[in-house]
Amino acid sequence: MLHVSSLDDLGWSSASALMLEKKQTDWLLDPGSLTARLQQHTNTLSLQLLTAGWQSKDQDTSQLVRQVLLSDGERPWIWGLTQVDACQLQKESELLNWSTQPLGQLLFAEEQSNVRCFDIADFATSAEFCQMLPRWGCIQTRPLWGRRCELQFRSCRLLLTEVFLPEHPMYGV
Image (tube, rainbow, N blue to C red; front, side, top):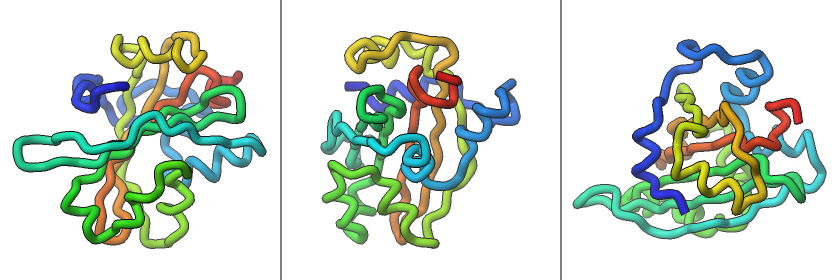
């Protein structure tokens, strides 16, 4: 699977710095639950857990890393990555047991979850990411938009990264 540190090499920008179509902006900057929005487009939303485990963040810190695919039953729509520092999980242990469910069902069930600003990147510029697309039955396209944000859930800060794969409705498929 994708090594998390390689994401820092992408050219992350604010949405205002990019030339995006309205349909793309509507999806990429939506602060609500992506899970709920996807469920409006399909009755068969499913999650495939790709990886879940601990990775070293730096010398002193480890983090829980979870990579998933969200699909409409057949076609993968979203590649998702969640990163949470180990020290924060001690207070919110229910995040440890959420491996097979879309995280949005938990995170946005409470009014207290808040998303900060999104950073946007074109994942088509990442050779490492594009090598994974055929494994999921995706063809490489340009652009391949993704977003990341910090989300506060109760006392826990999560870093969420979501890539809108080529079959996602945002691209008019």
